[in-house]
Length: 221
Image (cartoon, rainbow, N blue to C red; front, side, top):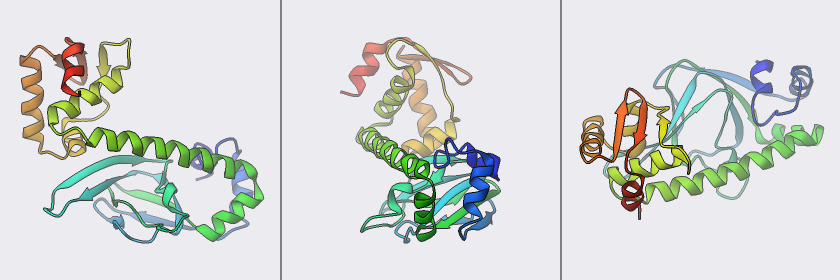
């Protein structure tokens, strides 16, 4: 556990022995979840620091029609909903579900405050983490503002490619990308096929070659 936590953004810069000594001073829990177990529900109070020790979870939102929008996959040793632990409306913004056998470290926020007082590095790491999280959510909102699957996939590819690269490796499967874009896998596959037929991209396995970058940029304007 301590080795995993030493790789977490919350305990960055602390040795395994440092982490062990700090955790010995507070109360915490370790909980285990099976695939499809619900870790937290959208709107549930978020009073804990939760760090994934093993496995991974996914965050999803549901609209009034029942449509599921996948927000992201969160793997060990990342924390969950750290921007919502403190503040007035400290509730989970998404429903969190275990994807595989998953183990979580759970620390109540009052105990987490004790860690801030014990080691300023943890406080600094936490502030950096929530700042980075705010930037991620801002980018996510901008991404979801694109109305078509084609424009969303174009934005996704261009963000991976940056400015100087025309070949990118997809880190997610078609099913995972379909969930990310809030559509079915066949719908996503059809759009990808159209983009290839139109000469915008070429896909081999999980590698995408950008054939017409200007056309992709036009799709997201």
